[in-house]
Length: 79
Image (cartoon, rainbow, N blue to C red; front, side):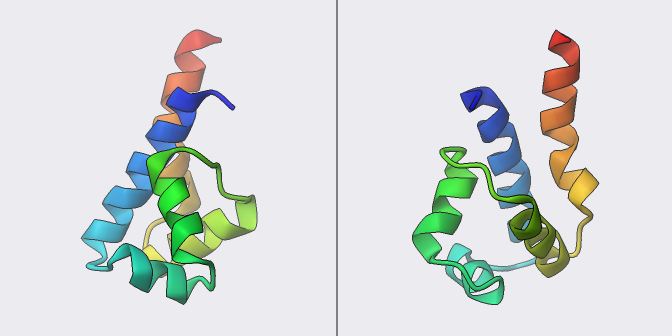
């Protein structure tokens, strides 16, 4: 995994969570994953599976494309 890509997605997820007024633990509980796993997503250490990304989007009130936009922007500049 390109670590920069993970960082972009992690930041987008963190921003969505904060705008939704949720803590990391609250969001992790809402989507039924371990808090440590969720923290790894925000840190950009691990990319979530697509279904998990959809759950994050739904729980935070944003669309999956909105979460992916920063990652897409970075990737498309290189191709």
